[in-house]
Image (cartoon, rainbow, N blue to C red; front, side, top):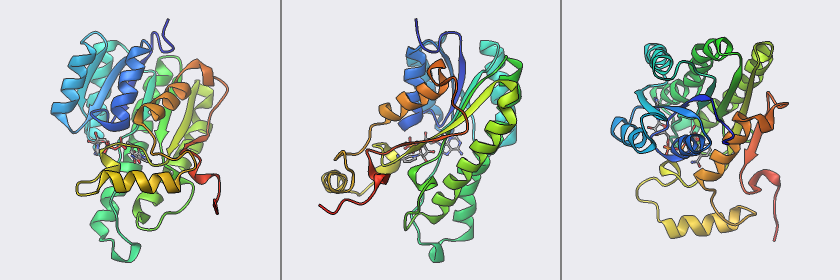
Length: 253
Ligand SMILES: NC(=O)c1ccc[n+]([C@@H]2O[C@H](COP(=O)([O-])OP(=O)(O)OC[C@H]3O[C@@H](n4cnc5c(N)ncnc54)[C@H](O)[C@@H]3O)[C@@H](O)[C@H]2O)c1
């Protein structure tokens, strides 16, 4: 018995990183998974590996209304319904606010914030039609506190938490629970940009994070599973920080 037997869950940004691990874990727990991304080769390869009866890849640029409509139609045709959504796709850019070009700010809003809104708006009616289910949004610890150098990103992640709370209120009567994960530093391509020395990064996290290391995408996937499955049946509208203790406070020694 899997924790997601009988469920059909759409995961955005599923070709790599946290979305990939969410797709892998959800499939292992019995769900049919619809993998949405703009990295077609990686997404298709993952769907093939998971198996045709269990996974399907759809090209889904989360900023596109037309892509969302097509993705939902493809999921319905392939698996009959959708009763879960993980809004995971996101992008990060480093810039101080006073140096951030408008196009960069708007591009980050478009993927991280508008993408999450479009996902809720398009998929929630499908989940309601299926008799209820879950939405898990991917915010960040920068959705809860500030971090210099990522102002546009932090603004969108605060917005994702606002969307999460309002959606939880508006969708509760339809049997849809909406929660958010707020990861700290997680070991994915996003947190390992080219040119950054892995040893120096590991040393940084040893000092900064109380648990002494960067997080693993599999650990975020386990939290997303909890929020998608029945173990969290009485939880909605909440942010869940998964950061190795980083936000717990300041350590002097
Ligand atoms: N890695 C971290 O330290 C960290 C920390 C906090 C929050 N997050 C959030 O976790 C989520 C997953 O990030 P990750 O760490 O796995 O990064 P990642 O860069 O490895 O993966 C992001 C995925 O999103 C996809 N994507 C980007 N733009 C898209 C679009 N317009 N439409 C569809 N897919 C798109 C990418 O192709 C990629 O597959 C993001 O929302 C990110 O903001 C990451």
